[in-house]
Length: 259
Length: 264
Ligand SMILES: Nc1ncnc2c1ncn2[C@@H]1O[C@H](COP(=O)(O)OP(=O)(O)OP(=O)(O)O)[C@@H](O)[C@H]1O
Ligand SMILES: [Mg+2]
Image (cartoon, rainbow over all chains, first blue to last red; front, top):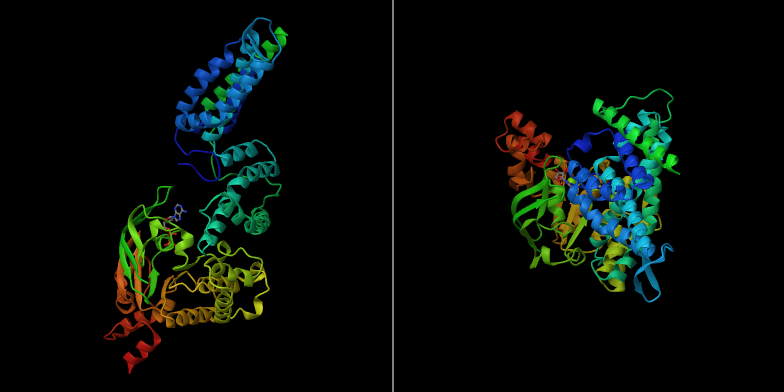
């Protein structure tokens, strides 16, 4: 089931159980190795093999596929076409269409880049699907991230779903009083105009209330805080983090050494 | 206008089965109170009457309309619904605009709208607050604005979702008065409430819900006397009923008048 306030999908899987920091490092390792690798095939293997396997391990295969088809693939295809036709490398034209030429080199270059983007966005998608934002933030603040910073990130992540939920209640109230909102686009857009006031006003009131609420619970207190939620950090996590850090270091090292 | 509910079931998208097969008939002009523990499904049930929710299975008829075939806006001409939380219901700049919003949408003529709005404002004693922004009013008055904005629609069926929660005695009396007035006009009034004394004093029929099913349904008198069954949905009979029982009165009494009569 999809929770309303985030992308997170509540399930039990090896990936869900990993510590958020480990997962963040995994995302970083995937992205860096895709971008820095000297081997042409690395991003392809990551995109076609590693990412799907990860989504299956995280038991979010279906959700990942739906994001991939609706968002990631169209964007990557667009990028691929742009670069394949317009990147000026290589001489031997293998495909021409009016003034557009494609060379083998530009094709390879564009394909590689598109795959890198796929890896990057996919890695983040899987991360968001398997990590609850508040879990991520509790873990990072426990490791020393300032509370204010965590607060800003969390509230930003939640603005959209909150405004959506609020708009929904106001629309229900208006429909209950005879406002036809099931009609065409203009009718619906028109119905939204009177919403803007209450929406903004309501949000401002909420911000103030929330500030009072968190301050009442000692938000700016200087003492070390304990957390209600134990976020697991197992030896597996520690081992994985070492492994991923090594991988990241190796990617960077190899890149520096070869250039 | 009659409401017929046939084996109504409803499951929220999140998977909560909130109504598990409810069948009821509510006749024109009836005064019905719905009681039951938190989460019993009271709000979920009445949201089906004006189409805000659609049955997962079964059906709800309002007069000759099957609610699943009519838009919420259409149903609004037959069913007025006062939300549980006025903050979720009010959205206008001032009380007058708020109260006129419904009748305008329903397409009444200009002078009819003015008349309806005037009556609703008078009934809820809001006459001196028409220019105020609803958000500048106290919660008790916000509740009255919510009431007025529905009453002004002049629908044959009016639903109140917990009208007395968090209200002081004066305002509860005001709300009881509003209900009595619309009852005089022959309208159906359906009220959800946790205030069992309010229920005993103002309603003829009581429906007790528990876990999405009808536990008891009948005359206030009969229902409110069934202490053991009501306990299943965490409802206590009115104090006077319990006192009457403790005193060994022959009949069940539910309000002051009956209590005094029984003592005579
Ligand atoms: N939007 C929703 N999404 C999912 N579940 C919901 C939603 N609204 C209510 N529920 C659930 O449905 C059940 C019935 O809720 P409902 O609001 O109808 O109860 P109620 O009898 O009105 O309670 P209360 O006296 O607290 O107002 C509860 O278990 C509740 O948690
Ligand atoms: Mg309710």
